[in-house]
Length: 329
Ligand SMILES: Cc1cc2nc3c(=O)[nH]c(=O)nc-3n(C[C@H](O)[C@H](O)[C@H](O)COP(=O)(O)O)c2cc1C
Image 1 (cartoon, rainbow, N blue to C red):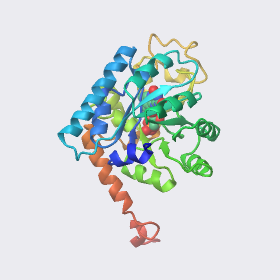
Image 2 (spheres, rainbow, N blue to C red; image 1 turned 90 degrees about the horizontal axis):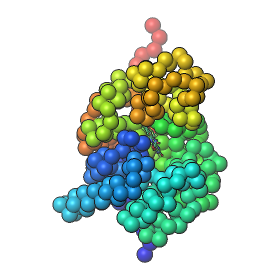
Image 3 (cartoon, rainbow, N blue to C red; image 1 turned 180 degrees about the horizontal axis):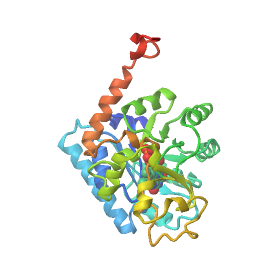
Image 4 (cartoon, rainbow, N blue to C red; image 1 turned 90 degrees about the vertical axis):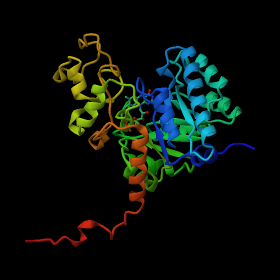
């Protein structure tokens, strides 16, 4: 019998959350700890420089999750996902995919390009493929290619963000797609996770919030910057990568680049002094002001569960706390 998305994901999750793949951020440790705590962990294949390292990462993750399940068969251990760019420009795709195939990775997240060949191949071992999109037109193409689910990357997301409002994007896609739907963009707490479901999506894709965890293997200054930052600390620019992306202004200044000079420039026009996007210029989504501390993943997920449960009890319309407030002078 074939697996269903429910069998693979929901049955093994504590919360409808995917810890999103992040370039130079996602590590086996982050993935394992997300999965062990009932949230899907993921990483971009590009975070490994060679197929040998990809093979090692997949072995490490698979072994750790299996051991966790053996230790406590009743534990909720979520599956993990690998993110692959399926655009023709990705010269590593074929070789990386051979490694993914060897490990029968349960969940593949594709981005850019046409996911059809990957979808067909992953289905052969009973895995699933969700495709990442930023527009309704791309959502339609992904469905035609046979993707099992869609990830809608809305305005305000960390990394290469979309520019469409999440309310509009989810509701428009729900006009023609009743399958699994993931929403990304500034979802930083349990209230956002619940709101995502109310809006009509099934899962939340959370990136930035997981950078400020003990397990994220990034420069500690990056984590501290996330704790200090609010919306005003972000700039949405294509200067560094050629595609619009939110970067933390203090990280640009820290890299020795004059912020007032970046508008309308390309990385070729600017003297970046050897600094690079992602490595030196750090990305974050619009939800940054909700990050107040760096905590272990287990602690963060516990907090998300509490908030999610509280949010589920929020009384609509008639229950607002301000109802007893007197108005006028
Ligand atoms: C530092 C950083 C790196 C990212 N790298 C990738 C990537 O390699 N592949 C990808 O598909 N998305 C990438 N993203 C986007 C995330 O997968 C996800 O869509 C986004 O973080 C969700 O928005 P949020 O950060 O507001 O939660 C990245 C995001 C961040 C913050």
